[in-house]
Every structure is written in C-alpha cells, then in structure tokens.
Length: 232
Length: 375
Image (cartoon, rainbow over all chains, first blue to last red; front, side):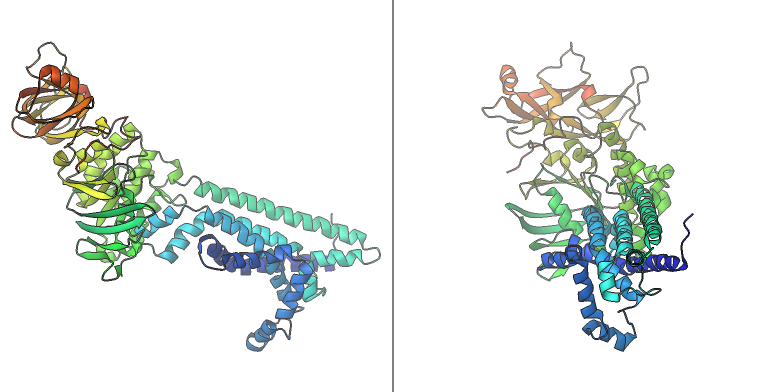
C-alpha cells in the first residue's frame, strides 16, 4: 500500500529507536524530578520548575544550540564524556536521543508530577506504620498508584521525541542513516524536486505511529486506573 | 501498655497530655477538636511533638530530652484509620501481608489464618479494596494492622464512617481481636456507647488536656450540670445474662438492683455483660409504678443531683448492690416529685432503648458529646 523506499524505512526505524531510547533513558530522571517537584520543599523550587519547563517555551533551535555548546566535541560536558567514557553525542543518533529527551522532558515531568500529587499521602503514612521505610513506600505504594501518570508521560514524551526536529537538526544535523529521523526526512523530501510523494508517505507513517502510541497509552492508562480506582 | 506525656502546639491549639494505657482497650474520649487525633499521630510517629516522651512496653519511642525519635516504620505501632485506607492497587491478601514483609521474622507472632478467620474475610482475599463494602474494608484494615504484629494497635474512630448495621457488625470484632490476639488497643472515639462498651480505661480529653482517667463507669458520669449534649451522658451496668424467654423473645440481664429486660437473644446464659444505658432513656419514680409498659425497674437511692437554672438536671442513682446509673431529667419533674439526695427511687429503663450489641445510635454522630465534664 505504502511503497516506501529503503531510505524511508531507515528513517522510520531510526526515529522509533531514538524516541524509544530517549523515553526510557529519561524516565528515571523524569520520575525523580517529578517527585522532587511534587513533594519537595526547598528554596529554589520555582527555579528548578522553570528550568525543567524551559525547552517547552524556548525556540527548539536555541535548545539544540545549547546542547551543541555543552555536549559538542569541545563543549565542557561533551569533551568530558568523550575523554572518560568514549561517548560521543554530537552528530550521532545518541545525540538525537538526547535532544529528543530534553525536548520531551517537560511533558513527561508534568504528567508524572500530577499523578504523584494525586496520591493520598495518608496511604504513605499507612505504609509507614506498617513498617515500610521511605524507599519501600515509594516503590510499593507511591509509584504503583502514580503508574497511569507515568504511562501517559512516557507516551507523550515518546510522541514528542518522535517528532522532534528543531533541536535535533541543530545539535546532530541531518545525516542519512545516523540522525535523519522521519521529521528530518520529510524536511529533506520537501527540499528535493519530486520529493512530494515521499514526504506525504512519511507524513502518513508519522501520523500512524503517533496515533498508535496514543491509543496504546489510553488502553494502558485505563487498565492502570481501573486497578487503582477509588482510593479505598 | 503505653505511657504518653507530650506537649505540642499547632496554630492556636495546644495539646498537653499525659496518661498511661494498660492492657485491653484504652479509650481516648472527647469531642471533635479535643486533640485525640493529634495524639494518635504523635504516638504513631506521623508527627513530632515539641516536647515529650512516649514509651510503648519497654521501648522508648520518643524522648525529646534524650533526643530520641523512632521513625514511624520502626515503631511497630499499628494504626487503623477512620476510612480504612487500604492500598487500592493491591488485593486484600496483599494488603493483609504488607506489614509482614517488614516485620523481623522473630517478631511475627500473628499469623494470617487466625486473623482471616476471626475477621471473617476469607472470601475476600483475592478481591480489590474498591469492590468491598465499608464494613469489609474496615475489617481488612484491622487485619492489615494486626499482621504487622504491632506492640500496640491505635484505632482512630474506626467505626465513624460506618452505618449502624455495619457498626454493630464490626464492634464485636474489636473485642475479639483484643481477646484472641492479646494486643493492647488505644481506641479513639467520640461515641459514648462505643467507649462504654469496649474500654477498660477511659482517658477523657478536652481542649487538648486530659480531664479525667478511669473506668468508664466513673469517667462517663457527669459531675456537673448537663449543659452540653445530653445524649452523651451514659452509664455502664454490669450484669449476668439470664435464660432467653422464647415466648416473648426477651432476655433478662440480672443485676443486684433488679432485672433488666432486653429484646432478642443475647447468647450464652450466665455470661457477664456490660450494658450501656443513656441518661435520656432512664426515668425515675418514687414508688414502683404498676400501670406502665416498662419492664425494667432498678431500685436504688439518689446519690447526687446536679442542677442549676437550666431546664435539665442529671441524677446519679446508687443502685442496690453496686453500680451507679445516671438519669437525665427535667428540673420540673424533679421538683414535682421533690426528689433529693438520699431518697429511695426506682430507675425505669425502657427495654427497647438498651441494646448490648448497639455501638452508637443516631444523634450521637454529628456533634461530639460535651456532656461529661470534669473540671
């Protein structure tokens, strides 16, 4: 039905891998930051909140450029990672994953934070009186109850990372097979004579992937919500 | 066995309470806002008081002078909340076994099977809390707290969210838990019937202060004019259950001052029981009346009359053979009869008003009782 070129298939596989890795890698940090913002009381909380949300309001190109400055070969973090761990992010697909993760982080944190705030702290107190320490309480009570929000946040982040364009192209450019995601491939196609059909096909693919992600998340969320429904 | 001596300020409220609880059930009794729930939170370790000392058994849980503060998860103090607070994402079985996970093996003295059997929750084990009724949830909450093998069980108005029928179903379970698992219980309530029925010791709290400590029969009696909720005045009578009268469906409870007739079967003959009689259900007569439907008449002498310019008065009657019964009457009625201290009287109790099984009746639940006072 959709007669996709090999290049298109490469872009699709790359996009899914980049968005998937971006989501999975940022999830622990997303949960930690959401917990900090939901439960923490410390000076400068507003500032942390602001920094987390910055990628949402900054032009994506700016975010990409900041990433390039920090994680580029000669950037302070980039040279550190390259020298000590041999990890190079700039102009690599891993860099695209980083850009996607940073851009989708606010959405993820927001969803998780809301669901954490909805957890009745008295349930945690109950766990405490039953002998559970803070860490056990978090993993046995708080996190399972916030699971619907974690799922929603993950899917939103995945979809956002999948469509990320501005920061990605600034940070890791548009290298076929390495950093050319669906979004970049569509952009490239529109810049090529006779590329309209390719652009349209990839657009349909992007819509299908994004829609499937939303449907799956809705399904998972319903199941999770049914499980934790009505704080008993 | 708990010793509490704490001082805690919260906004404009100042809690300054010291008491000791023994074996069996100790009730913290007082109106809403008297500091009962704060006290529970301090004992459970959910809050830290400004100053104080809390000892459970031989373990010091809090001593601000010695800078001791045992965290809530190390206190091994069970807590049953008013609204059960079961973990909604876990099954009943998982809820029950939650605390066991964190109990050192050597201290797991309470096992699942007897708890499930006592509470009658065997059929619920694989269900989730959202599918349970209020009474069922509260039973599971009792089990969950018990199975952590706590040193002491705190119950914060565990029946308050239940309707009458559920209360009557859950109340006897609390007595069974106390007896079968030999666990001291600190029971918070503002329902006089619950307290009178369950407690060995009552700690009366008012405005953050302990105003009286003692047996329910002594503490629940007003020593001053009835000026608050007259429905909160109650007496506790001890008696022996007699043989069930099948023809009329009545059971006698024998007291030295007379026989108290209750409707319905009360179980085993010869059993000792405690009855809660509200002051508003007692009428006084100077001679034994013939032409009334009331079957229960107890003889005694007027011990004390508490009255002022208000319309109501309370009369303590020392019953023949021991026990004190408090009647709430109108000042008008007392003057008509000319009743005074030392007079012989008959205390008439309507059988339909007394029920050994009833925990609390309507009218008690909204406002906390302010009747019993000791200043």
